[in-house]
Length: 287
Image (cartoon, rainbow, N blue to C red; front, side, top):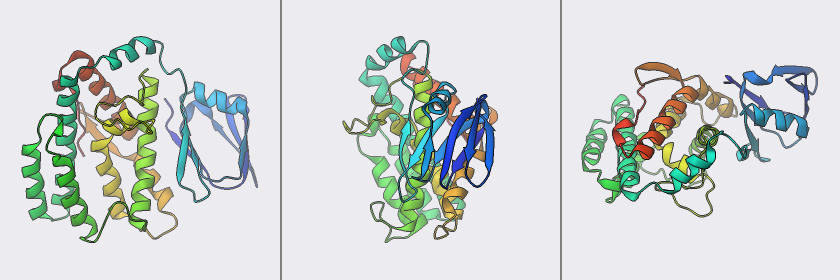
């Protein structure tokens, strides 16, 4: 599995040479493709060959394409990520509503727990206590929307009472960039395991190609929030700094893992829980 995140920021030509990605601009740079985990094309002035795209796809490299404002706009996902994908997709289609509701309940409880931990670290004790109450009130399929109530308290505490997620400001641009990078990790993992990202357990937007990834990633969003709090978000370098999220080490299943390995363990445990109708199999991360 690759471990490098490669970011191309300027006008460049990319091609394939002897299993290397070759980047040519002011100088020539080569990167061994099996070492690449993510390729982020941040400039619209980049050209590359289909031979390179094909080889990157075979090596499960996530390719993220940015728009003219350098924000993630789309990504390339391989059609065939697993030898057993037909069986897995059949299982996915037949997941019953009871196990989906139970798993979603556990996901939301863990998300609120992670939010509470960050609030506690930031000394927002009153708000952390409110989230602890919401945590205990989460029901099957989060029928009473404790997630939404928690989010309002949580974001107003860490970013101020005037903060709103829909506004176009530096904080939201930073968060959206981080969430997009994080979502791409989940997309790649689920496709690699042979599942459809379009079919979620709670998210069901017909215009969202990544409903299942959006479901699974919820507890990991707090990692982006934590980094955004520590970044100079008005600095033009915040995007490069946000990519440091790939160097985070999390404890999961009794071991320290880098982010992408932790996501792999977590996704596999969620899929086991859904397939075996046993939410106790879910393995959540710890900081």
